[in-house]
Structures are given as structure tokens and as C-alpha cells.
Length: 402
Image (cartoon, rainbow, N blue to C red; front, top):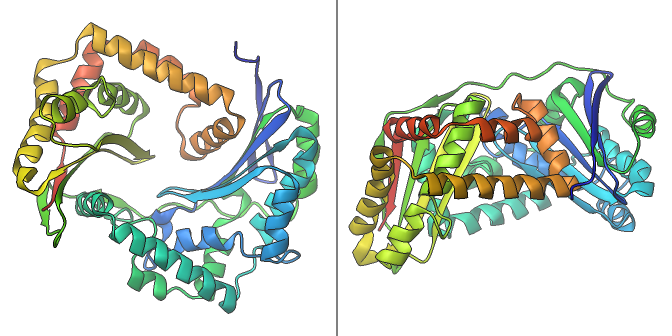
């Protein structure tokens, strides 16, 4: 049985704080900053490189001391960059929450970016980019994504080799100074600490920053449908990636998620059954839903032997379209709802993942997890089917690597 939870929120000097109390020896903390890759502007990869620099030293801790301090607390200390935000996370024992918040605040306010450490970390990021370029599935997906989305979403989160080489220390310092401000940030704390203790610790550690100005993202755009063909040199496989635009409102997004569980890449789903089990075309089939406040996309990727590229593309496209034409069976929707309920139950049991979900949903204006779960249960079959038809009729880009 899920432990009882109490949730509250408050604002400290412009910083939005979400607190959820449950009976646990651990506390998960997430700091979500509206500073994702769509804010890179003329420097693709800037947000991602700034995230890396959060772990390279602060005003009072060098790189080794910072990471040793996190290890002393015994917790899981990490960060991630998406198109919309940079999320800094930490999970520790309840008794270490004071020190954990102190370390996160040190990174938030006082990250230092000097030329030497930036050169070193830039080399690390360049190796990450080269690794992605060597992955044919990722390369195919990124080509489809960048062709469908333009403007602030039209580049990979990690940028390109050329753009990252062009970023200097002043660029990163300016980015952190503009975006890492209270009004641009949500702090979520989930675990055994009580509300009054959380209020006291937040006031102690997050006292240095002024509210600042909330950043508005540069616009994104959706381009017309298209097909992209790439060459794979001497590779033995072909890859197909389809990216389709989706309305970004919460209810259509939730309906799309249910439909994708029916159509997509789980072993009981239609695409998996058709591509892998009936035809034996592919070992890898994947399907995902990504979103922001003003954009969303369904992505489907599969691979096959070089000689089966056209057949694979035709099979994937026809399976997606057939679902829009025939609708969904009651048994399919029941299984999809059960899988979604299971994922929400897992989320409820994970303090760190729940803190991250609360922080990002508050930051981006999406319903909190429990509200979203109830909305999912209220969706009618006809609404889910209608939404999938809209997805299949929306702009899309198909990329084929042969």
C-alpha cells in the first residue's frame, strides 16, 4: 500500500517550492530551472554544456571536493538537460537534507566557469556528440526531429561539434546568470522531512538570489511533412524514424499517451506484434511521447536489414494508419490503462522521480501526477481514438537510413 502523502507549496523570495511528506527514511529533491536547450539561441548545446559545468566546481568547492561531498552524503546526485529545463536532483537520508540543500544551493548560485575547466568539459561533451553520431538509430531520429521542428527546437539538445567548439566560458557564465534565478525555478522536496523543517532549510540555503525575471522561450515552429533519406555507408541495417506533431494541451497529450500504449512498442502493442512477431523484421522497436508547454511529438523508430528498408517503412506507416481507421478494442484500452496505472504507482513509490515530476509539471504548467492520473481514468474510448486520428493526420517527418 502506498504511504499516505500530504502536499503543500509556498514561495520563498520568488522561488516556488513544492513539498510532499510521506513516511520514508529518504528524501528526494529536484531543482528544475527553465533553462533547457530551446534557450540556446545562437549557441546550440549551450544549456547542456552549462549543466555539465554545474559539477566542475563552485566558489567554495572545487570539482573533486564537490563530488566527494555528494558521495559523503551517500545519495544519488545528478542532472539532466531537456529542451525545456535543466533538472538538478539529489536523494539522501532525511537527516542529510540540510547538507544536501546546501550543496544544491552552492551549485545553483555559485558555479564557477573558468577557461581551463570549460575546455576539459567541452572535450567530454564533444565525445558524447561523436558517440551519438555513431549511433545510426539516434542519427535517424535526430534527422527526423530537426526536419519537423524549426526555431528553438530545431537542434539536438547537445548541439553539434561546430557549435559546442564555439562556446566559451563567458557564454556559459552569462547563461547561468540569466536563467538560474528564483522566478525561473521550482524546488520540489518529497520524503520524510516535515513542512516546517523544509521551510526553515529553504530559507537558510536559498537566501542569496533575488527573484529575477522569468525567461520566456524563443518560438518553435512545426514544418510541413517531409521524407528524409540518409546513407549508412557499409552498415548492415536500415532504420526508420517517424516523428509526428501532437497538440500540447494536457488532455490531448494524455489521450495520445494511452493510444501510444496500444499502438506502440510494448510486446502486446500492435507495432511490436506486426514488425517483430508477425514479420520478424526488427529486433528494436521503440515509441515515445515528448512534450513542452507549446509543442509535443510522437516518435516511432524501428530497424531491419538493409534489403528490408522499404518493407519496414511501409509496415510501420500502415500499422499507425490502420489504428486510426479501425479504432481500439476495449481489451486493448483496458491493458493500456492498467500499464499507465502501474507506471503512476511506481512514480508514487519513488521519492526522487516524484520530486522531479512535481518540479517539472509546476515549472511547465502541466497537471501534477495525481491529477493527470485521474484525467487518464476519465478519458473515453472515443476521445482516445479521435486523438490518434489527429496524430496520424498531423505534420510528420519520416527519416530512412539505408
